[in-house]
Length: 187
Image (cartoon, rainbow, N blue to C red; front, side, top):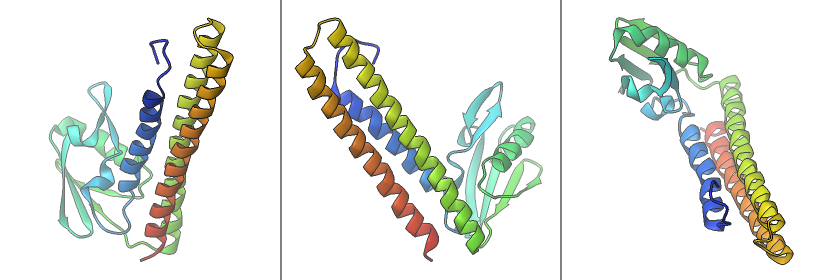
């Protein structure tokens, strides 16, 4: 909101961005089956910056319960290994040269509960992002009213629109979480 104009569509777009990020993160929580998307949220410390795993390695699924990560630059193998271990996905890397193999464990009850906790953590991060957008939008309309660019009535109307968009954003996040939770807990 660098420009000092109120745009409810921009606010909604930013809130939907939080849900889109959550969808990607939840897609990475696999329910006992290997998928290249499982590693999508992983960021690797490479060349002095954080970069997505896919930008420094190719990820394949040679077997239903195995993911192979072929690191392109030998000097990044340890960094990729560390990023995988630190990702809280519960995967133990087995490294052979520039290839890292990840066996996907069978989902026991404990692992399912762990995945649900991770899903809840992702959802809370998305809710916080939506609330940040709401706070920025509310600050903007307060500023516009203070500068006499909008009336008190406009302020109240915009505040109601922002709250409605926030409620919709949070509801979408909760829906995504509920769907994923059912997927994890039922097999």
